[in-house]
Image (cartoon, rainbow, N blue to C red; front, side, top):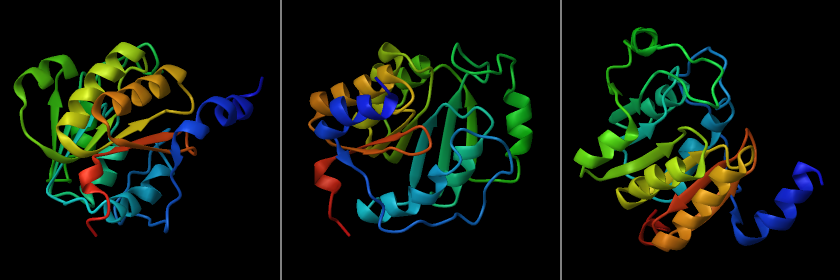
Length: 203
């Protein structure tokens, strides 16, 4: 069974396909290789569609900073949490906090934190306008981090819903647990979009 058949039969039928009304290229992006490339075109659409405020964004899984810079175009404050040591699903296993910090130094509204998500969520009780989860692509970690994110933000997005079935399953279970509306954008390895229903249609 091909990937497209699997997605059609078991995934799309119980998740709303996300169809952006417009594609917008952010003013600032990084010229680096990133699996996230392409998704920057729908962030403005997500913000507008769901009436998100532009105060704060938190990101779990920064790696080299591509998505963090995208978010910096739209939010006054972006907090990026990462071990900066890679994981079983990344090609780079070397410590790269300093490298990423130097790369993002000019973006003054981005704050990088070298931390495991487990330690971070124990002490952070803030609420964010947008949360992005792109950590190790296992069910347990995605569910644990993603559930916290969904409970502490108006909208939570998850990368790799198409390329990692365990991410897809975790996102679906978080939607069931929280009662939030779930969308999926199937391109660029997939982006799951969880929205607090109270946030839909504010704009």
